[in-house]
Image (cartoon, rainbow, N blue to C red):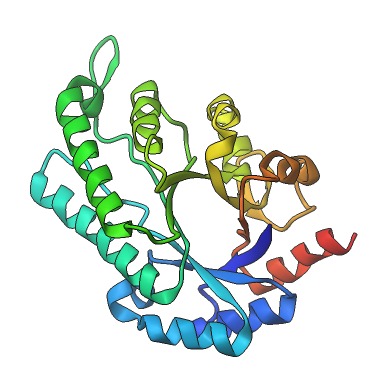
Length: 257
């Protein structure tokens, strides 16, 4: 497996991030599309190819965290789906083989005796939008060596698990396992991830203490070697998802030790 780093807010350009990855002996940079400069419309895929050719550093792409692909408002849903499809087209031109996305639970109504999720109640609509999304992602990826992977965050409700399994029926979808999120949220998705370990194509790797995650490797409570063994043979790329230069440099001590 190859190890990489995320784009950092303290570095001004993509090339600055690439230079740090090179300095640390990493293989790739995960571009985070939650900031203006890393929108696919603001980048040139040819520049990424040139950076890879110059420094030997590849790229992955983390999509907008608020992708509401099944939103009840079809205008909003369509806009988010188009954003994903545009990102796939960009990735194909830039030589990117992995995209990561979050999977939203949607709006929840709090009733006197229970909580009701809109997507759970309106399941037919939910799956109609998911079917359209899956088909369009498949068509856009085509024969490219590229996967769109769903990351575990705060917990997949049963209706979300069913939806993710529906997407995973297609070979263009996979999973991104985030070990820090798994611990921070009391292993809520652990059984789900273990049962689908063969679908894990990507990993976010960081340490955690209680509810504090994204801390440097070796400074928290995780059995980091165990976490790597879990994804060994499945995850092709592992992002050391620590958010500062100093944190990344300190994290590299884990590998030397």
